[in-house]
Image (tube, rainbow, N blue to C red; front, side):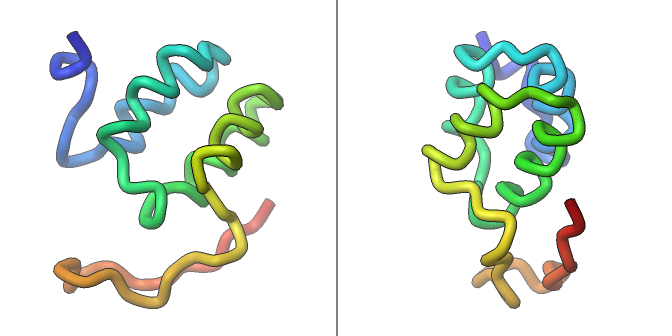
Amino acid sequence: MFKNLMNPRDPVASIKPWIKSGNTMLVETMLEKIDLLKFGGDLLTMACQAGKADVAKLLIKKGANIVSVPDTIAGEENYRRTPMIL
């Protein structure tokens, strides 16, 4: 079912509308396909900006961390650490 919703090239854009909707059950299911080490800070920022406390709590529970953005990720040559501003 979620294969049609999730774009593997841009998982953050795929989940963004569902974060804004506040649908925690759908977000939780979609998180199984997202690398929270890489995208967790962005997703957490989105949830906070949208005022979705339940989604933010879910992301934190699942391991999203806005402070500990990795400097590098193995196998991702183009990844670079970017500061998170909330």
